[in-house]
Length: 153
Image 1 (tube, rainbow, N blue to C red):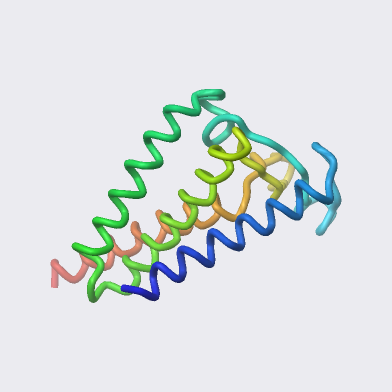
Image 2: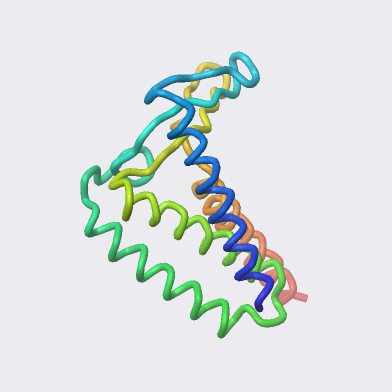
């Protein structure tokens, strides 16, 4: 189980280092293209949750995040043993949750910077922690599908 906590720490460090680089090297809303018309680095701040919902509700985010962290650690310890994909997914979610929690706690906002355009749609700007959360949830869905197929056999 130790390796999965190391994965969480790597996610947290990668998230915080990239956010530090953005905060210290970009002006707010400054944007540079990496792949013109598709991928940009754009300095953005979010005082809410995904897509800015519940903006300014920091105490709500503190409570929810603490609950999520405790739940994930419990779940990793109780149900993660022997399930590598599931444990890896939980490690990503844990790292992502803590990464954004650190921002909310110390900056009172989340630093976002990955800006993707899908055709003409400007997808909401996100960060490494958000990516880890989404990938982790996706992997849990894959794990559930695999387990369900194994049960049917």
